[in-house]
Image (cartoon, rainbow, N blue to C red):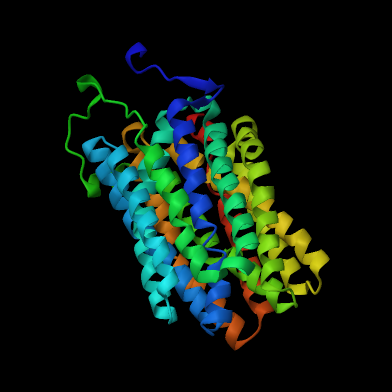
Length: 398
C-alpha cells in the first residue's frame, strides 16, 4: 500500500485526478470553442437542416463509443491506461482545426467522426484512472471534481466562442482551438501510472468474451436502462436549435449554452458528494426526472425567459448524471475489470446516439420541434420505470 500511496491535494482529490482534471479543462476549452458552433455552422453557414445536425452528432457519439469498450478491455488486459489517454487526447487535438476547411456537411461529419475516435480511445482508461486514484467512499466526489474541471473548460471555451465569433468568424475560431488542445496533451505527460504488483495480477487470461460474462446482470441491466435513456436524450444541440427557433440570435444561443455549462460546473461536485452520501440510484433517478421536466418545458417554451430557465434545469440534470453514472458502473464492476465495465457502459449509450440523434432530427424536420421533445420525455419516463429494477451496491451486499 505504501509503495503506491495516493498523493492527496485535498480530501478525495489525488495527484492523478487533479492532472486529469487539468487535461479535461484544456481539452474542453478547445472543444467548446468548436462544438456549440457546429450546429449553428451547419444550419446558418452551410445551409443544412436539423437532420444533418442529428446525423453528425449521433455519428460522432456512436463512433466514440464503439471504441470505448475495446480500449477499456485492452487497458485492463495490458494493465496500462496512460498510452490510451495520451493518444486519444492527441488525436482529438490535431483534428479540430480541420473544421475550418469544411464547405459541405459531409466533411464536417468526417472530421467529427475522426475527432471522436480520440475520445473513444481515451475515455474508459481515463475514467479507470480516476477510479483507481480515489477511495470508494469519495468516488462520487472524485468523478464530480473531474466533471467540474471539464465544465470549467467548457464554460471558458464557450465564452471565448461567443466573444470571438463576431471578430474571427467560425473558421478562424476552429483554427484557434488547436492551442488549448496542445496544452492538454502536454499535461497528460505528468500522469504517474500505477504499476500492478505481480501478486495482484489475474492468473487467467483476460478475453473479451470472459470479461463481458464476468459483469453482473445488475450492471448489465443498468447499462440497458441508461442506453434507453440516452436514446431519448437529444442533447444540448437541440436546445440551441430551439433557442434559435423561437427567435434568438446565434450569439444569444451561445450565451445560453455558457449558462448551461456554468450551472453544470457548479453542481457537478455537490452532485457527486450527494451520490456518495445517499447513493447513486436516487441521484440518477432524480436526474432522469429533471430531463423529463426539461423536455416538457421545451414543448411549451416561447420566450427567452422560459428557455433560460430550461437551460438551467438541463445543467442541473447533466451534473447529476454525468459523474454519478460512471461512479455507479465502477461500484458494480469487478475490481479487475473497471475499464472494461466503463467501456461497456460508454459503448452501449454511444451506440444509440446515432439512431437517437437521427430520430430527434427527423421528428424536428418532418413533424415539429415539439415532437422531438415529446419523444425525449416519453423515453425518460420509461427509463425511470425500468430503473426501479436496478439494485444499488448496498442492497446487493445485503
